[in-house]
Length: 300
Image (cartoon, rainbow, N blue to C red; front, side, top):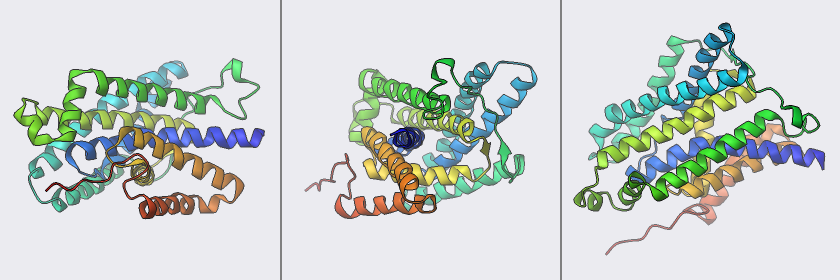
């Protein structure tokens, strides 16, 4: 039972991180029908930003949880700026172009950002400080759950709730839903579509930054390739749940996280990716629109 709980919370932690990144994919696709393949690199930049902030504040003698809080805030602001700039440079000029053009631009931006960080930092793995110590009230269960897992789960849950409330009840949230439903009609009704698209990239980049810092604390190391790996897994989660569906992205991320955790725990860690992408193939065969996605309707 203890081993099962360990795998359960491990899967929940994986799914939480995948959800933070997958939301960026699904929000952008829901608004402008673009798969932003550079989104994983934003996650990677968030992790490196957190490392730099942690190094500076550790040298100044700040406590671990204060360092974590500041690292999260700085990473969110920094990655939001990257997301906003990326949309203006790589995607906005191609908004009316053939679908293939922005897709190629996204791949090019991904390669550019990865090599930019490579030149600015190093291709080697770098140690990331453990900013999350074990809580006293969890000492008896730390070997099962762990405070790092708990913080990741709680922060992810808070981010999901805040995003849901924002989209459902705020004026800009209604504008985002209107733009996702029919962009041209939203423009005719006075919605500032450019502002909505920019905000979508900012929110998605912020969530990816949070995921980058938290998973770096959890694993204890980072390098320039973590964005590609996490991005592919998060994209898989978005497709599992239904690209364009925010609840679907959350559900798909949890399904993927639990699948990887239990498969590696009870079968073999060598086949972790096999089970993840095998699940994706099955979903695409039997339910191409995803678990919560809607089948496209043909207009006549």
